[in-house]
Length: 323
Image (tube, rainbow, N blue to C red; front, side, top):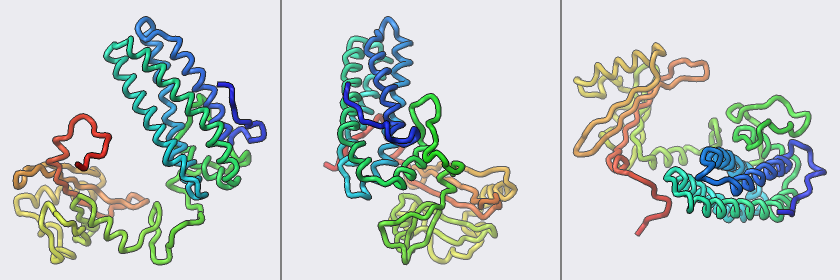
């Protein structure tokens, strides 16, 4: 591969410059993989393969940081097309790993050629289409936001890239990032949560649609909420709102519930799990302690889920099966 994007005018820590540095590493690893015999140099081949598979970080940065910003600028092609190419390469990694582990070395050699060829083709498309267009569309502020999110995902490089911008403030974890950004949806009737905005109607729809029974008991052991799904595991009615939780369970299980609440309140435990057979269905019941930012006990969430069909799942299903 001889084509390359000119990054000489970009700061070292610019996302596109980092992609360029990674490209050199990817090309070297790909070349080395093809020159290594998977049978005679099995461990070396496996080590190079594992290093090359760290390209997943590159894919995740593009999919979660770069593509969303490009979508905001009206360019949805990468999200629709290049993401699909990523998934094809991910599948090639999975197939090759399986053949190496099964010591099917003749096919592994051929599959390694297919894999490296696919990766090199992707690098070419990045250099000739993705990055030049991205540099045209995105502002410096856009790139700053892209880079900020990349800190959480990571890179293939052995050392952390240079800062961008160079006079960058101390790194802020995404969970503590309250930077106000221009939003493309109406928030006038929405409440702001830790991540994003939702209206009361949207929250109700979300909780009603979730395939879980959720009940929230506050720090005073009073039931303050349950979600009203179409098919609940256990019956609930509005009469339990405001009721002490010990009166909402059968006498034989009240002792267990009270013990859970006691340990949660003391801070010695944070989770309790059970699974039972109920009406020929397997039900998974979990309790989680709710604590605020100061670790103060704020109650408990009880979650129940019918996992009968989930328990039967084996292997993989990667294609849509609606027929």
